[in-house]
Length: 454
Image (tube, helix red, strand yellow):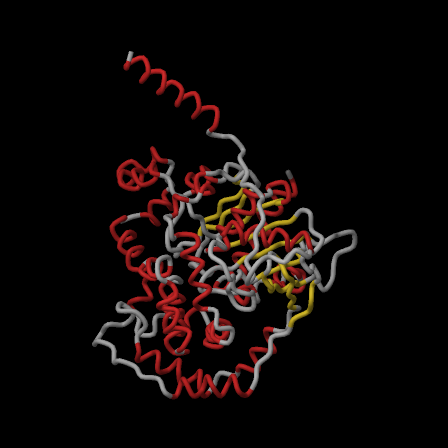
């Protein structure tokens, strides 16, 4: 009798697996309230208001006073960036920040694109909305939502926006012209921080979906890396009929099978669908594994006790800069750990890097930005239903070689069955739009062309 029950259970599981494995599930489109106190009974004000980035003498003077009082520990000899941010190079950054960096000028640059705020689920949501300066006759712009991650901001997209909204004046075809919307994740930059626990990537995806509807877009393209990749993935899982196409430059795919395939893939890569380029990027796995371990310490802190380290970073601009800029070093290229300056100025200008720091410093949002890790990872990544769900919208993927983890096409397709485009990018790392805007723009345009021709 026991054997019969066991066989029936196994057979039932097999039947269920075959029936459900390709079921096109969607996440429930629920609702939320993340503002302070009890949700008002009156309807939410859906007006969209212009917003302008501003600064003051008081803000700048306070920053300078704090920088002048910095207290640094000397680095170990020949430590380069292996122990974190090298304080000898940090002195150069601090000196430029105090004496050369012009925050007022950068505020003007920030304001060159139109900024707005609107209240959604109790939070003031900030976004920039850039329309094409000109359109070819008979064309309409394609709405594109672009979502940043941590420790980034909407500013990461400033160099890619003109390539998408005004391609002809940048040497590109005007076959595809975009209207770009870049929101700030709740608790980042100028978007209000949640007052309640639980505002995770799914809630953020729903908020940004409501934003797109409020702007009058029923169908649109979405793009993201880092948290932006997860938020955009969740949006495709929530409202697939509204997402014309999903483009990613990072994926979060967890399957036990891939752990096994990584261990065996060095010898049997072909059996697991690995290409020669995949093998180059995945092996030696020991090196990749240790690199991931070295780069993930911050994650454990932020998904368990974000407010503790947040107290220090929100009080010290130099500490904040060291904490964030170290990511722009090693996440751009892990080999930059071997350089005295972390290779920061090989890919970025200090003006651009410090502008990103200032968006965290002046808004006081480093702690609330770190809480996003606890909301998404605090109970374990596999605790989220969406992790095991596939995404059934047309998808494009750009695999940058220095991303924190390489995801082969076979892995990506297991999560995104409608993968239309998978590109091995020739260079670049984690901050793709910030570091290689031309490459990313070209891949987005290629993917959209494939979708439009379907």
